[in-house]
Image 1: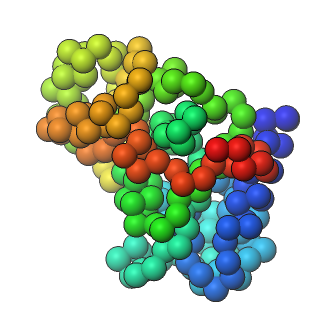
Image 2 (image 1 turned 90 degrees about the horizontal axis):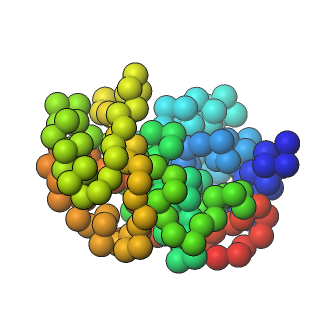
Length: 212
C-alpha cells in the first residue's frame, strides 16, 4: 500500500538522526513500528520506550530498553503523530500512549516527528483530540470539555499503560494549540492532553523528506 510505503520511508529516514552507541527515545504507532524495524540495523546503547507495544518490538530485536529514570542524556526522540500543522505542532494519542510520549519528548534534546503526507493539516482538530483521564474523573472531565465546545467520546474498553482512560474529543478547530493545551491542562482529572504545542516537534519528516 502507498501509505505504508510512505510510513516505511519515514521510519527509515529517521535513522540518519540516530548515532551508534547512543540512547534513543522511541514512540508508539504504525509509522514508529517501521522505525523500530530499521533501528535493528544500528548498534544503539539502548532505548527509552513510550509504550508496552513498542517495548515488545524493541526487545524482539535485542535492543535494551531502559527506564527513563536511568537515563541522564537522551539525544533524540522519534515518534509519529495523528496530525501535524505548519508550525510542527501535533495531535498525538491515537495509539493511547500520550503521557509517556509527552514525558519522553520533554526529556529529549531533539524531538523528531515522522509522518506520512495524510497527517499534514492547516489547522489541528479534524482528528479527535485524545485526552488521558483518571477513571473516576471521566464524567466530570467530559462535562468540562462539553462546556468548551467539544464532544468527548470515551474510548470504551481501552485502558492506557498507566491504568487510565482516554476521551477522544470531536468537533474542535484548534486555532490556538498552545493556549488550548495550557487551558485543558488545568482541568482536574486530566493526566495529559494529546496536544504537543508547548513542546512541538523540532523537525518533521514527511516520508523521507524534511519538509517542516
